[in-house]
Length: 263
Ligand SMILES: [Zn+2]
Image 1 (cartoon, rainbow, N blue to C red):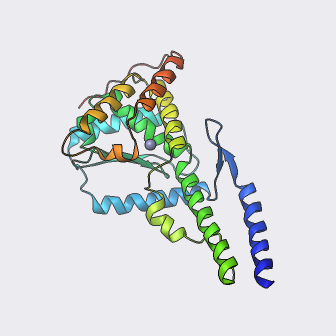
Image 2 (cartoon, rainbow, N blue to C red):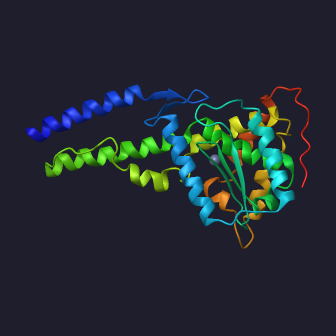
Image 3 (tube, helix red, strand yellow):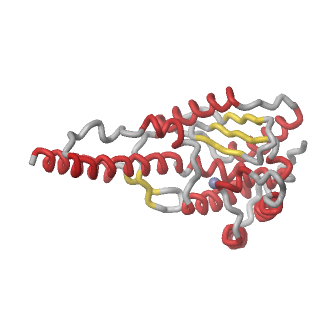
């Protein structure tokens, strides 16, 4: 009886918690967000510091200036952010074909990506897409989901073992710190980032059509002996390209001057 009562009160507590945590993504998708923006920014910043210790940072001036030029053009389009004052861009000297953006305004670009993203517009497509994961709060959403899944596990163990309810809401946060911020996103989040990223790059003065060329290049590169890391989390399937083409057709003309970032 004690167990049932504890279970019920925990369930009620959690469901009211979840109701208060509902939000809408920039494209109107419903999200459950259990963490505050500042908590997520802190997590992102911590993970970024760890990565900077582990990976070799590129000191090549030309490469850094080029990546910075593209990233600046895209981020300056966004305006001030709520939980951090500026975006930090780091170029990692690595053959990995990869890039990411973390809450807290942290952007990482691997030099290996620059062989596949062959011009400023293709690089802007990747950076725009990664930034969209941040502005649409996808890490928060993903981490919240894993929290709820953990809570579900705790509930079932309450029923089967009759153990006491303990520290439910923050269970698994330690795990989230290690894996939550860097894990692959879901399909809905990927499509959403494609759309937001595309609009963002176009409004920043880059050619949105090059996003399609980027994914084609990525698919081509997957045949080599070192398949792109980015492809393991971002499958370049025909749906992705068809969706991008449809969105490009919907884009309205803008009068942003064309960017001129060069290596
Ligand atoms: Zn993505």
